[in-house]
Image (tube, one colour):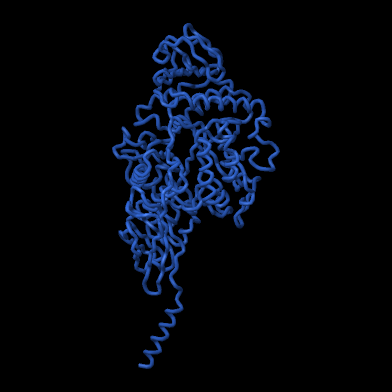
Amino acid sequence: MKRLIISVLLFTALWADLPAAEISRVEPPFWWVGMKNTTLQIMIYGSEIGKGDVRIEPYRGVKLERVAKCENNDYLFIYLNVSNKAKPGTLKINITGKNINLTREYELLKREVMAGARGFSQADVLYLIMPDRFANGDPENDNWGEDLSDRMEPFARHGGDFAGIEKHLDYMKSLGVTAIWLNPVLENKMPENRYRSYHGYATTDYYNVDRRFGSNEDYKKLIGEIHKSGMKMVMDMIFNHCGSYHWWMKNLPCSDWLNHQDGFVSTSHNSFAVADIHAPESERRAMTDGWFVEAMPDLNQRNPLLADYLIQNSIWWIEYSQIDGIRHDTHPYADFDFLSEWCRRVTEEYPNFNIVGESWYTLPWWQQKSKVNPRETNLKTVMDFNLMLACADAFPADTSKRFALRKVYEVIAQDFLYSDWRNILTFLDNHDVSRFTKSGENSLDRFKQAFGLILTTRGIPQIYYGSEILMYGEKSEGDGLLRKDFPGGWREDKVNLFNRSERSTFQNEAFNYLSGLLKWRAGCKAVTDGDLIHYAPDDYNFNCYIYGRVKDESRVLVVLNGENRPMLIDPSRYREVTGTSREGVDVTTGRIISLNDKFTIPSKGIYILELK
């Protein structure tokens, strides 16, 4: 009996010495009352809390629906119903059990008057910025621990931040763009000697921006300033994968949180397999379940807890920061059913919102209400990589070559495949491909034709930062050189190309052309909301691509000459566009072109004629 008493006392003493349960993270950190979807998932992470029982103290309009536990006792997933009867306030969550007695306060906030969530459309022009490479407004946040900025290294951090972007909003406004798309801004605390993550695509925390850009509040403030300036903000999100140094990677919630959780297995990168009706399931899984690269573990969105977590994360950022749209990275690589449900849930909460998914191939298959996909994607907008690739061929940098404008025509002639040809994101380049402008160019012919095309054809145009001042960089030389610093964005820069006076005559000509076209475009209903009528380059108008944009009385005729010689144009063929108009004004030069007789367009020239 004495031995038994001693054993019990020893066990009790040992139990008392065990570490008490504690809460390390709660995500999302807070929520709002009055959401259309009343279900709220709260992920709680902490030592051994999964062994506890959960209850919420009485709170009007809020009920505990269920508690989901994982194999890992360090996680709890609590599902609440926050009904329309709930008012803003502080909810108390109690977790109790052996050696567990925790209370966590959880804020339910009042929703702000929504300044964002406006979406984007053909009326907008997106300006794509890599935040690390645009401008450094606060040098104090350049470094984080041992991760040091180094502008001499193309693949290191350079120090660009939110403050730098905010400082140059007037510049973007003067250019004439209407929306800003930032490459990912969430935390990417990846060891620089392991993987260069200055680009932002290896997320290590889904609820905090990278401190080298600023704080969450700094991000929200930037968006507020963007809205005050009359522009919009598009946020880049990545739900296919996270960074290998994401905080949960050391202690995953479930055995199926990742695809190939035992270790790296590369994706096939064959995105055709997702849409291919002849592809076996093994081919599809090789694409969607493999890791993008070894430093980016592939998330398994078929896990319902993870799916809810990711969907809520996007809604949290919309509500918190008031973004207007999302660009989703590597769209075909994630689980199809998850993607469809995510887009549906976001649109249900924010009907005007727009998500554009990055897919290089099978583009019409991915757009919502697809004519060629029996399954609903709920994705409003796709990226027109087909047109980008056609433009790369159609407008060669070699000045001795003709412009192969037929390539552009053939891409646009296949718009019948899309359910909505207006919601296609068009662009000449971005952070993943060679810049459109080439080193050593001494003519703006291809610049003016290509940008004239992108800004007047169907779709939603996107311009990559620095294109307006003729920045260049080749993919073959490394991604870091596609993403050079904007000259003048750093205090130590010897030249500041944000200033007109410091740009060359050639650069100012490019900037003025683009800016003038953008500002005209904003007020032209034919371009921002009109139909497209185009004519095939053939023996009748040899290597000239001619098309019109028409909206009621607003009419525009665009004429592109791909030849190295002037071409004579007979306007009588284009009466479906010109109607009774007998002259047009070239919006970039002010020149008046008579439509009563044949007219000449210069070698590799472009006319954008607003019809009178």
